[in-house]
Length: 153
Image (cartoon, rainbow, N blue to C red; front, side, top):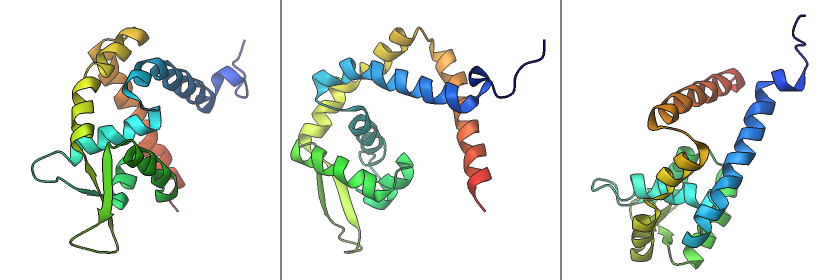
């Protein structure tokens, strides 16, 4: 019997949407002790990786927006909440006063050491090895790139 091309289970968009919801939901209990939501965790990951490097120290909201594939309007409330929690500061850039610079506070740097167990915990929860993660990330990034290219006029 031929596959139904309109069957729900045959749709990549359905599989990705469900997988995304389920994975993000499984992060909730792991991130709660850190005081972070999943979107806030992603912001902190980007800052820890890029703003904490010796050559960087500061990321603009524009740069952070590009790294996270989020528009600045979505990112701004996340940064405000992280700033209220004392994890980041936002200020006008010394180089370009139009740009808003984001830096990690000492409390934010301390949180990084507590977050080091999150990736390992999540791999265990999802029953994945590091090789599985690498392969999955490769496929997902290929899908992201292809979708981005097809959406670009």
